[in-house]
Length: 147
Image 1 (spheres, rainbow, N blue to C red):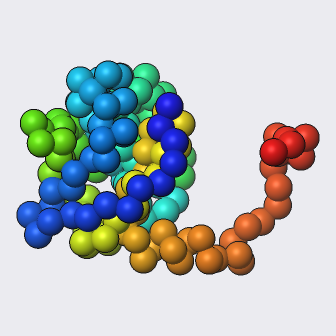
Image 2 (tube, rainbow, N blue to C red; image 1 turned 180 degrees about the horizontal axis):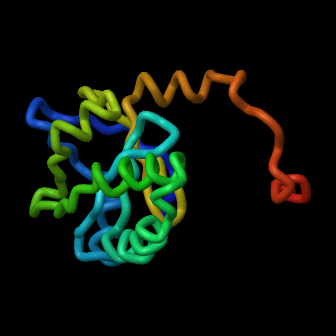
């Protein structure tokens, strides 16, 4: 499982070092093979271990192309998907199109989400944490959840 949040830096070439704890799990889960793509609702990136991506890709492809919302999700998730490999120094190179989509600059946040990770611009992450307006209604599934 990918848990926790990590403040990391990206260099001028778009390379970022995966924190050791996360990197070790990625190497164990997928030999460092990742798929990075655009998030459909937030301006951040989704980072999947390759086997996890291979499980959800057929579900994305099966969505109806006649539904505008589904088609947008397909275009973002599949259209931006990029296969990456963690190098010998524990780094990955984020392509310019993905960096631009998520507004990634030097300071980033890598946030565990269980079976995947999210990669955020540090500024956007902090703004999201401070935003209390977009909360909406609590889903039924959360009503009985006790933390």
